[in-house]
Image (tube, rainbow, N blue to C red; front, side):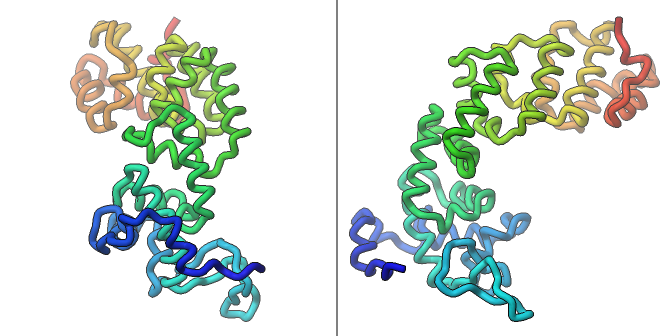
Length: 295
């Protein structure tokens, strides 16, 4: 194994202005570490604990010359590093992400989703950034962090294959596929089965045009059984019976919280359609009540 580069060599590739980066500066490695250890990140402690030496999860999957051992004495595939080592490994990546326009909170959220972003080879992070930009998502976009998350664990070949699948399944042109990916990069992480079932439902049951879906790609991330299908049945029932305007946008409906949906489209019709709430609950279980079968 080649000897590690000296501190002087490592610092030479870092912009001079970062040498005067205060530990409390927004976007600094220290500030990112604080956010990662905050209560808000407790739902996914993997990345947060990577910079916390007191945590039993203070581990990483980066290569190590000496494998760590478990309590039983066996070798572990996840070597343990000290906080100093982890800070040294993560600092170049944190600084580069900050240079890309991401603040401490954005970097922390990204690292919670993709823990290896902290310690992976800096060149790999630069490749991820270039890939995100290649999708048409600029660094200044609010979608940039989500684009990085989408491409973090996907090869260029898989991204190309997924875009081709989207074009074929949703009958999108190159331009429409580009619009959809820019607006919702997370669509690249969806399985083919998930995309196929949602596409079929939106195109053939709801009757939406491909270009309409391309401009509203969030459709493809919503639960089919828990939201899209049962909410469509309710809206269609209400339209068929004159309870709501026939021009009501399905997209505007499904993007609302369920509480709003209940208060707006279920509760007001208890007297006129006393079965509606029960039928909706049945539809959420994957069944189609007789009242929701339209000719």
